[in-house]
Image 1 (cartoon, rainbow, N blue to C red):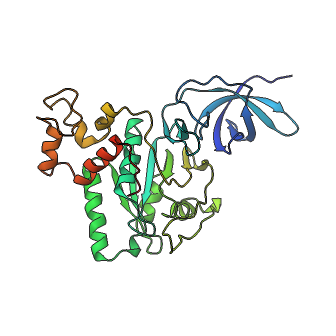
Image 2 (image 1 turned 90 degrees about the vertical axis):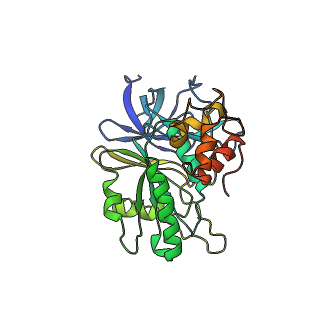
Image 3 (image 1 turned 60 degrees about the vertical axis):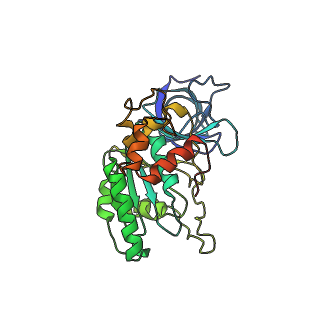
Length: 312
């Protein structure tokens, strides 16, 4: 006999099976019931970590449940599916903030990649904190470059933090960043996400791997998104190390809306449908020439418009 429906939180996704945490804190293995009619984006994974669902008990002995309904999302983060053309992959849902970990080297994070992440988060109104990790590896000149980048993104309204695990720089502030929020942590493989998470939540014993000196590329340690409970109302979602982040669900005409410095100028161009390329009377181009918009940000805008690869 089927029990009545209960509410649960998706805390881990492994493809076809999901870990569902009941409101009482018990974790079940769950799967979608039969053919599921889905609304919203066309995705390779219908459910994301952070989703609230309704479930029914399927098997008392093996403690498995059937997911019968996905509750409406406050927001979600999506990227292009690596395997299925034209589809998206949901990274997480119902997020209070995204924490983007980047490194100047070992491995290098490009500003183009950061900008893609910021645009995706802006599109779903998710605040972003940018953490510059491995500051201890940098010489004075490299540090100055990072401080310059940080100043740019701080002026655009993003939170900034500098961290170094060996020097214990920024670790206390990093830990405080999570309190009372559902946070998604992201960034390239090898930037130190797992090492930082082990400081925030040492009980979790999250697996870490070294960055390959030869390729300066991180070795993937996370295969699926997982949600960790760090304390009361405090959750951390660790998403897979992202090699690329394709923009989805953003029309080209809307792209400038998700660059804060361009959004401020919307409606001021001579033409309503200005794409800020070579049109006469374009205030965005004027701001670029006057140095009010950073060249790197404008190049990122062009790259996204042309749908170019972002790993430059």
